Image (cartoon, rainbow, N blue to C red; front, side, top):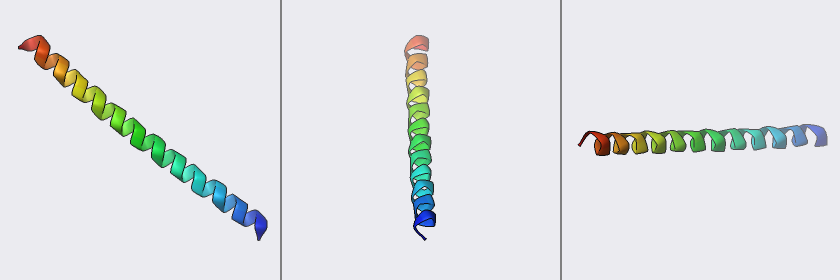
Length: 45
């Protein structure tokens, strides 16, 4: 019982960490795309 509970906690922690990492990557990609579009506008205008 105790061992399976520990595995469950580790599993849930991993899911949270992965979700956080994916959210962070999505945000940084959006920021990079936003910055690129701003640079393009400044360069072409």
